[in-house]
Image 1: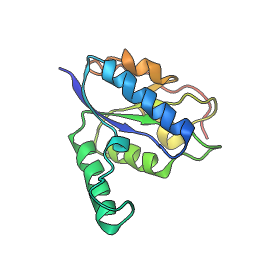
Image 2: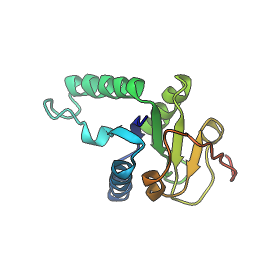
Image 3: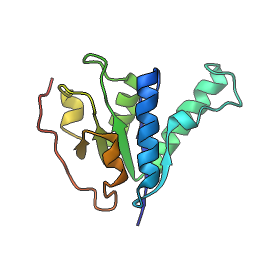
Image 4: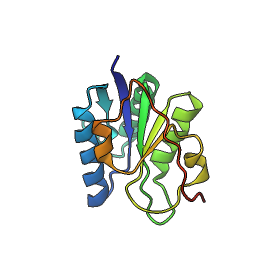
Length: 147
């Protein structure tokens, strides 16, 4: 049975927007993904961005979507060794709630211990999301450098 996916990813610059857009497209092609919630596409435009109402709606909407998800896909391409704090929080929340996390990291380099150990599968290209079997949830451990 196809799974509901939550896509955690930064989208603050052109490179990040390109990467999450490619991830959204790849997931849309995947027959084992019944739906995808990408926070980038749920910005609560009914409220002024960064207003109190927008903040509450965004937080609650994202938490509800994670709670509703069967699986999280987390894009963790770092800037230096710094992961986006929102993505890190979403990742930790999913792990704490026993939601499998499929990590995508296209950039070379080490992975933070707190993400490298609890992840379910480690992919190095968003293109792999088009064919990953979310029904089987095959484990692919991270075996590279940890910091």
